[in-house]
Image (cartoon, rainbow, N blue to C red; front, side):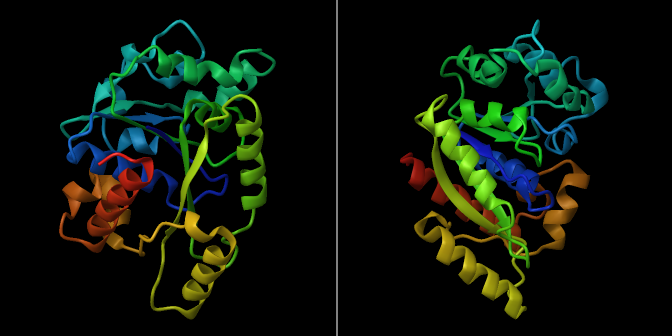
Length: 253
């Protein structure tokens, strides 16, 4: 399975979900690769020291470096990272007009063969070329949506982009699910937003939702997943449940 974590809105828990879903799958014994396509490189920094890297996804997608060359071990057994750097922001311009531009990540992943049981792709908060590359390469899309007032703003554009990808470059792409994040069960607004998301997306919404958590916010600063930073926290329990749901939906026991 190859899962792109995608939402063009920032601050919805996309990178937090990428980090912790990858870590959770690795802990369940799946050899997992976390590919960081976000120029902010937060998924990378949560696992490795940027100064120790010899290559990154800019080198891979720009050509001349294989994906296998830049992969480094993460903080857990079975977890591996394909790192990002700020230079990734230049790729939109550099690859613009190249006929194979939307397929570069797919080709790189295909070159790995079946080495990884799970590949998680963290995307930037845009619907640009990097996100398109992720969706062309993926088998599934997971959409985090924050339980806030403007939660559904922009989702029409995202779903339209997914439909366009499914129509031609990746007919096998499926929406794995919609994940409600930063849910504050104490507020009426959060509960109302959750009902609205359920009304729009129906069975696509995961039963698991991620509540607001200081521990989740802290864990990236400690270069760790929630499972290492606060294994007894609500965030760890919720992301563990999400891993179970993901595996059920994909059909992997």
